[in-house]
Structure formats: structure tokens, C-alpha cells
Image (cartoon, rainbow, N blue to C red; front, side, top):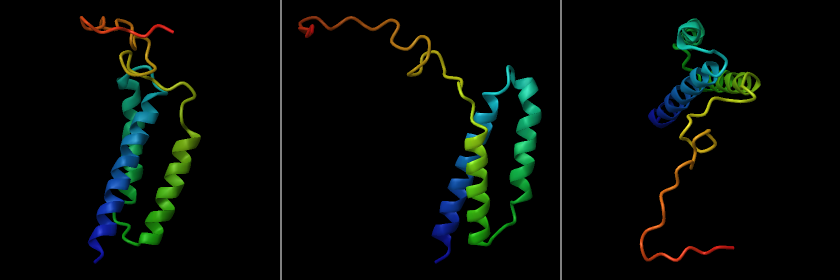
Length: 104
């Protein structure tokens, strides 16, 4: 009976961990200087590894999400070819033969 909430919490925690790493990477120029911050994040998650109370986990998760929101970068890194990146839709493929593009 308690397996489903535990699995849900585990996926929530792993998602939070990945978002924390990606958010912290936005603040550093290269991965070598970022590595120390990544180790600190890992240590903070490992410190709460043995917490089993759902109420305590909920408090920790909410506090971590609040801290993640406060520490988010105002201009996060986007891959150049991703939507919003500098190369997004730079070379749009031409329409296929026989298509009539609508020009408005």
C-alpha cells in the first residue's frame, strides 16, 4: 500500500535533483568550476536520503522547490538549435514540391 507514494516521491526527488543541477549549471561558465556546486547539491540530497516520513519529505521537497525557484537564472542557457536558441529555425527546409504555401 505504501509503495505507490514512495515511488512517486522517488521520481519527484530525482526530477528535483536533475532540475537543481541544470539550474546551477546556468550560473557557471564551464563545467570544471560547476563541479564543486554539483557536489554540494549531491551532498545536500544525500543528507536527507534516510528520511522516510511523508510529511517530512513533503516539507523538504517544498523547501527545495522554493529555493530552486529563488535561485533560477534570469537568462537560462538554451541549446542553439532548441526552441528559443540562436539557431532555432535558421535554415527552414523548403516546402515540398506541389505544396502551395499560404502567404498572408
